[in-house]
Length: 348
Ligand code: TXA
Ligand code: MG
Image (cartoon, rainbow, N blue to C red):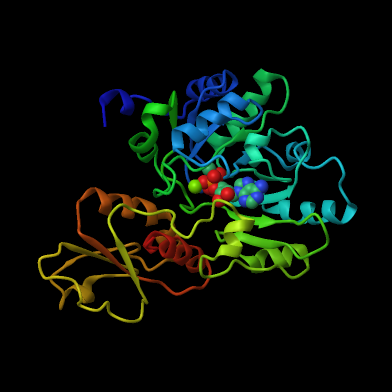
């Protein structure tokens, strides 16, 4: 990384937040912290700003973007003008998770740019739970004189591991961004749960797992919710165009093994293998001369989620031949963690 790229990182002071909002207003790209991952943000009502996002990330135009706003009330203007009371009711019930790590997909307003939705009939909306992101969104509305939705995919090159620190953003996209607000390491560490509220009365469906579980959504909605499929599949790729089987991948090949079984000693002796486990590592290293790391020495899944991408990025930078991961139990946050690890391990 060049020094100039690192110099684009600014602590999120009031002054830097005001400048970031001004950059957005002028149609520039910024790196924005959220509670899930850092976003590559641009104003979502400006086609040339939105096109810069696709170019910087090398992202296919067919993969729609999430629009970020400061409140659920602001989200209303992005939704279809023709709104049934049932759908309105569902929206009100799930938007109680906002601000928070939940993206809601609803039929779109005609006012939204086609390049944001990839030409589709729906729009993905989120209110992030991060003081810096919310401050930027409010400031932007103030200087624009109206609500401006902010388009923000994860701030990584397409298919690479998502960023959870300002430095990760600078490493992957620094050259394309006018400034990166440093809001510290992301608290959640995994992308938001995505729930689709269909146009008809078919059941809501989770398209991407995250910190908000299908059970929490079903409770809030008081109706059944279709959960995410465990295996990346063609059907899911069609419903959520960006959920490709291979995604979130480090460059180093990653092999995923069940957590309760040791990985087979199949690799060549000369291979430089990094093993990453969940929980304390002390007893596991005794019989194993390899390099062993843990995603969460404290055994907490929330810690593993928060560390996952930083650990994979660090591993990738060290030039191992292979990364071997022993998975975690698929309960709670473990569902989303294993989803990301499966995609990271997917071979073309
Ligand atoms: O936590 C997050 O959601 C982060 C932060 C920055 O907010 N953003 C994020 O954006 O993960 P991105 O673009 O990396 O992932 C958004 C996913 C993609 O898989 C995209 O295909 C899907 O949401 N998506 C967006 N709009 C959609 C729509 N209208 N219908 C179906 N899927 C949609
Ligand atoms: Mg992404």
